[in-house]
Image (cartoon, each protein chain N blue to C red):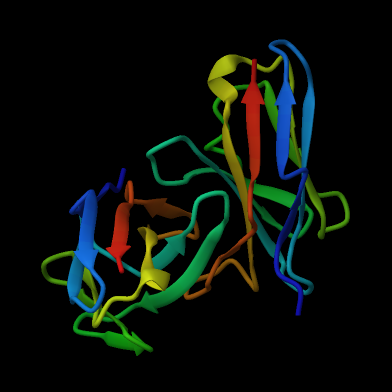
Length: 115
Length: 110
């Protein structure tokens, strides 16, 4: 079956612009996660969805970051007024339930570069 | 907050050699995940360990969990160039989110 897909694979934008990153989880997975990975670091948690609702958005760095999952499937991570420090690989993962034990399967990521 | 320390940070081995990567947690481990990542790609799930003393193997990769030491190890036997990549350990605390180590970069020379 299809894995987690993310689009675009690469995004280059200018400082101050708005960007949207899309994640298509594995079919039937109710839990969806966004992580951010900077160079030389492990992924860092941003937000967790259970169904349509954001169950935990404690990892979002500030109010420029927002994510939605309106129908409980596809999710979009939105970044307003991008800054150079937002440059990173944004990873999406999904899992069947969200509860433990539950394996998170990752997409290929979107590499965001803010000039 | 939970922190994971991986060692070594990088490793270069000759094809055919065995190697071990370690992951140590600052807090109790409720579940430990091993992933592999290649440049420009996402994380590929390798194994999950839940119980102290648990050991799992897949092909030439074996992972163990020492709950008392809050540590896990990943052992590769007879390494091949296809094993090259970044190995990441991730811990699930008392909730669903994963906390990752910084990764171990493995290079296998033919």
